[in-house]
Length: 174
Ligand SMILES: Cc1cc2nc3c(=O)[nH]c(=O)nc-3n(C[C@H](O)[C@H](O)[C@H](O)COP(=O)(O)O)c2cc1C
Image (cartoon, rainbow, N blue to C red; front, top):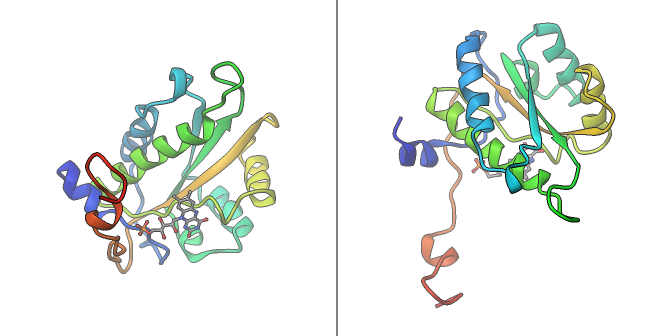
């Protein structure tokens, strides 16, 4: 899929996934797109756990309250942040994680799968439980969960505000 077509076709999917396995080669491609994202000071602060073991998927889904998009996921990618400082007293792990995630969302879309960026719904205790399930060291933080699969009923991209409402040349609001 061409890049700009992929960007407009991407949408958050929260429905049921078909019982259709995802080849590990595709999962590797998706995560490689995350690895290839820019990171502050090239600190490469984010690592990725690819979950394709059905019982681990179910254990994680249970922690999310058995959301259908997690329960029926054929694989999950868990983004793990190293919170150490990147430059002076600055850390960039949140931005690093977001950049990697967006790259992966696009890769997932381009390969014909769907996903949703799950962050707010797992922040705190759920993320800590997921970390435990996949043996993340205590000094690292699970931040984003991407359940992946072939959607049973594909959705549509959300309506965005227009270019004129959100962007200008040279001066804000002109
Ligand atoms: C930082 C961030 C956190 C998000 N957290 C969640 C979440 O916890 N659960 C969820 O269902 N969607 C979550 N989303 C997805 C947004 O709800 C979604 O991107 C937004 O509604 C726009 O829809 P679209 O992705 O289809 O364009 C999150 C997105 C971002 C960027």
